[in-house]
Image (cartoon, rainbow, N blue to C red; front, side, top):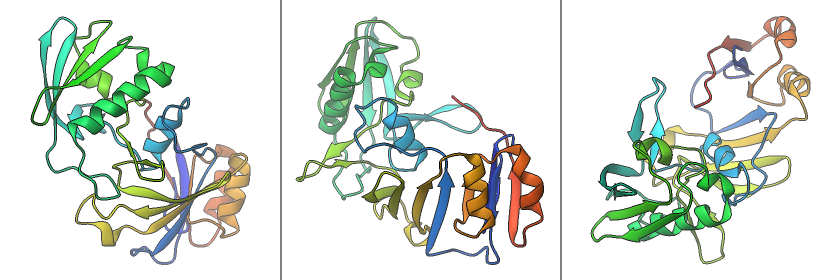
Length: 251
């Protein structure tokens, strides 16, 4: 993977960034060649895109070393051939400050399972019920011996809706404005204690990798992800642009 940026650049994935100042910025523009088409997780691959943007999270996730770890959940237990109990963390909040409850989890998983076909690929139909306290029970049409891995799949994001009917998530960033070609993100002040160290971000969509490289070269973006290999030589000769390569994994 490759990226480039005015602040930082990266290529196995390649990205690039441009920066004369590597300190904490108040706002950063991130260039990519894809963008979530909506904030509705029941639509196609939108949950994956929202998670990659730092907006959505799941009950479990996969760390860089491949280990599956709790995220919104705190643990689980198999209670039958087709049933698992999942405990929710007591201190987790959505970006609007609302506490994540077992009811939120049950509602989100039920809606995803009914509306997004990808939420049926591993388990088939799911029935999610409250079990008291912070516990929900997931009963599935098909068995699994790795429910934590299933709940770490990209489709199973946890969400709620506000009074206006807009989707609300738990990630480190929240949507401030969404357009066809960009998303403006603001730090989720309920996520952790590092909110003041996170800049506001605009994720800008480019038509292809070469347009993305041109945007970085011309100083229109701060960080560019997934740069074509044939653009790297030119970018490395641009003042205050830095290029880095790193392994990209699809889990």
